[in-house]
Image (cartoon, rainbow, N blue to C red; front, side, top):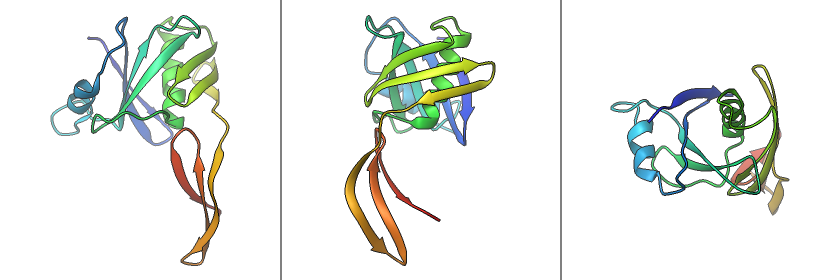
Length: 143
């Protein structure tokens, strides 16, 4: 297995590509372990897809699946482009939907899926909070 480690906006990922779409959760646990593995926040596996440039399989460091990781999309797009898996202007499939990316050297621009408000705003501890799904749920506030 040949892999690369990427860092994107504060998160780090182990990325490789495969011709086989299968469960890579055990590989995620081993590779992402910061004491006995390479160490990373997540594992991204790029697999073929007939309708897109490729599909990604995303795993958190504990081996659980995640539909989406915004920072991971930039790392994934750069890896796909530099390894000849996609052109600089690409579309790929995630569990949350289609991601469009443009790679220009080390600059990666991504168009994520449209955020959806899960819960109306609520106040807690003097802050106004919003529960938003950007592919995975996020609790956000304006500071």
